[in-house]
Image (cartoon, rainbow, N blue to C red; front, top):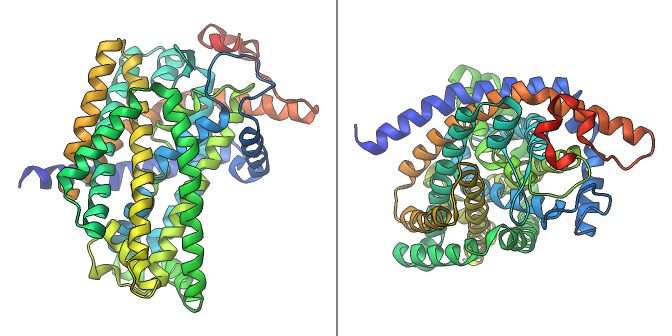
Length: 472
């Protein structure tokens, strides 16, 4: 067994069995504990998101430190979420797990929104003041909420390896695939260009990162969704059959006997997690940067981000592939299948491939930038100074270049291992600290019932007041 096969096997065991089971159980638990908040409060999520988009900062905020608005923090997390998983990951899931994998992506998104709410609210609650903005995430709430510095340090190392290196190599690998297929561009050239662009932006700090994401991500997401709608309309006669295939393959009688239901469930949940990141512990790092008057506000906004990523963008890719009539098994999984599906739907032209190439470039590149930030926030937690941060930035540039040249199987396998370990670390923490998120949710609802714009003060939870100094 070579190194690539070993890495793939280890990643499969961790993600296919351990992680899938835990994510489902914990997501159901948080859904019940929060009384279905992802359903009952969806109107409030939309209201907060629209408000944060209209107003660059929260005028009712109890604290003014920080230069990252609520919407920018949302865009930063979406930049990380909307990337390879939405275009290449969905295609891989359908190729291996069949159309039923799409259904299980929906399930993990709907349930996972509650998990995302808990971890993002905790990220806001235990955030600290950085040089230019607030900073926080699982390493911070583990250290301050659980007082386990070794645990917090372990998570900080794992997320840096996962996002700064493993996931960034996945993103650059997919960009290189797309450019090579559409334009025959050398992978070496793609790697060099990506590395240079990455270094230019990351040396500008979190403010430049958030502003870049705020502008690019919404434009590309809307354009991609419009393309999906056009393809669905062109193939509207196939749409009912597509829906039937998704549900039948997810838990049909024949699929149960054939054993393909398990494959659909595993692939859907795995790739759904990779895409929407609920429970991984990544989005709390972005959520913590926002300036809001109550932690629950950003928690709800980030929960809606799971819907945006999976129910909208991932579904767009799934419908593009399944409506096109292209047989997934005829192609390798990944971005190539998505490109072929679009070309077929548009009459065999190369316009679809060109657009997907542009989309994957911007989606994956913004993911690289957001992923970099997650790593920086955590190496700063470990006590890294300006020199260490500079070295980390150079290492990210190098891994982006290397990822463009590495085999996809090895990259996905390594990402599965580091993602699984990091997620397990975070899930244990939010189970122990989740009571604070739900206490905050209760406080938020009570203030809303009194007709107030909710404002949180550390005296609301006196037992952790000393550990939540940003809310004094």
